[in-house]
Image (tube, rainbow, N blue to C red; front, top):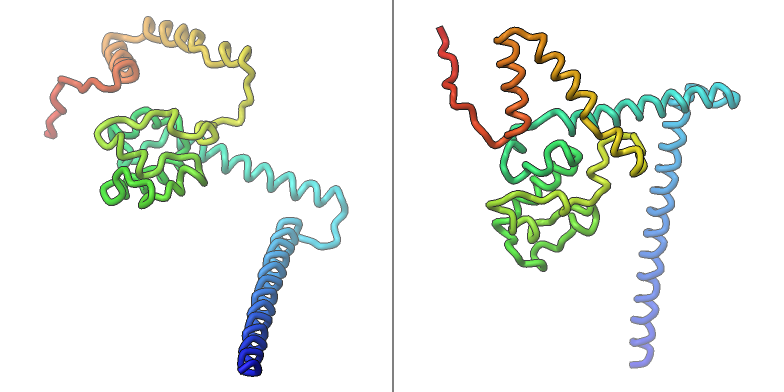
Amino acid sequence: MDNTISNRYLLYLRCVYMLMRIFLFQLIMCVICRVEQAHGNLKRILQTSMGDLCTCWDAINNLLVLQHNEIKALFETSLHVLTHSFNKTLYKDLLGMVSKYALVHIAEEFNKVQFVGFDKKKCGCVLRKTHGLPCACELVRYAFGVIPLNEVHVIWTRLSFLDLSSSQSSSYLSINQEWEVISKRFEELDIGGKMTLKGKLVEIAYPNMTSLCPPIGKG
């Protein structure tokens, strides 16, 4: 009886040992593949493996400039490009204030609201824990309202490279200079131009208002 138990125990240890070897082998291979991939990417960026500091510096600088421009383009998209799926009252306070990437995550999470409800166990709150964005059990409260901006982590509201202090922000974010230009421009326009410019300002000042003018019929 004792021998049988000992044999089973040894067999169990051998299985564990083999599983550990397989796991470690796969882990090492995964690390090697990632290192080789990173090394290959670096060689592709530098275009040589024998360059000096100056040539490497120029290549890395060009890469950083490219990434900077890509991120800036994403900022502009989040600020100015409005996707039809987000043209809803639900996202009114987030449009132009939150990254488009975050809006996509929120929209995907909102689709789970009808299945999750207020149940935190069903929800799991993964999006809140990992991204700082409202999860399904939180979004259910705003199903017939507006998602407030304070539900979104501040990192998703950073849509500019500018790092302004509190003393600088008040002057930079002022619209006094722009308003003076608009006023001068308004005085220089004819009646039709003034009507057009005033209509655009009304849309900005009163976004919830709808035009009472019927659409122009097609001839």
